[in-house]
Image: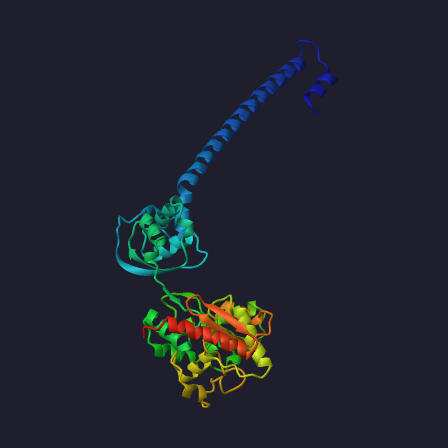
Length: 389
């Protein structure tokens, strides 16, 4: 019950003790109101002060504490900044595919190439070419400046890798010689690696023979690549090429054998589809192929065939004696020769002859008489252009 309610009920007269009591109560209420207002002002002031203090602490956290925590979390002392350079010694570092600037910084920091992650990331951020850094193995100096490390990763001279180019039409023996010469690894190491067909991925349809299965291309190998991984990369490329062209597994070997014949016989890609058709036409008719390149392959030579070699029935690759395809490819065919076999030109040709080795002009014939005329043109060219050797 409030004081005002009592005042209205009692209603004492002026000057009475009740009236003085009421005045005292009113004075007390006024005093209490003043105290409440003062408390509110003090509370509001305290609240503002707390906000200001907290705001100051937050600013300090942003400016001081968070960077410290960031450094702590990254395991690096970015404040340590940079080495003065230019660096000393050397170390090989591997930049994986898809690595970000931060990833690279951590790799280089752990190898002691840079003093801190920030030394590299700052230089990375200011170099517009930095995003074009390629994956691979790099041989860098120890304790480099961040900017120098970025520049080194952009310089191909710092990249440690081996590029091996295998031309179309190379035999297996030539490919192994090229690999050994480029990598400086003994050729015996590659031969030993090929003994493990499971590790190299040679398909069963190859019958254990790598001829024709090492795809001609330019390969980039890293320092830690082994003869096994190199051979496997070439086999994988052959399988991938055949798969991309829709060649079924049970047709791979036959396609590679035919494509290798085109590769060795055709003077250029324009003649290849016609030559592929002529080869298939002869096979369909049961004719001997009479391809010099197969005889030379079986004899272990590249040129200089003799009549005795053409008559040698002990050579399983002698297509002047044996009908059908040779036992294996005779070289590594490129994609164009494989495509020619898969999509030969339309025609009834049975013979071909390159009548001008300089211009690569090749003529195709449907009859032996036409073919002999073309051969006569070749002999005429040879007489007019005697060999130096």
